[in-house]
Length: 155
Figure: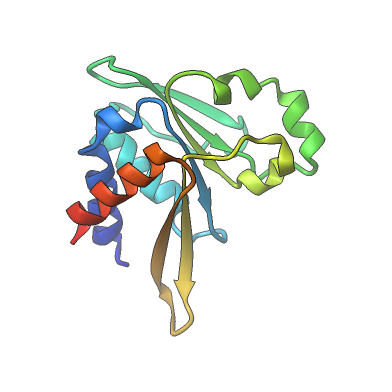
């Protein structure tokens, strides 16, 4: 998966904006695997203007879409050292509320985070540190419908 492929995949997700409005998507992968890059492409494709920065230090960046149809929340839990810190962050209501929730490093919250609608796993290919692949796994009916639509678009 090249950077152009990453942008195309994000565009396929954005073409299903109506389906994204209430979803939770967990993003897995090693550092540099493409989670934040894909998220930036998605937010830009959804119409977010201005700087899209990684929430590594703040834990959360909130974005309002140009058409104001819904808000997008980008979480990065990399800096959490224990699941208890997730509880102490006070962000549970945001994750359980309306809007698109994109959560990098969800495993850092342990069992305290609700199951997502969809999981994207970014992985380096064993043959090349430059080539990546992404695997979509649905965990709800809404996630399954979105995954099917995105895969059709990406072909």
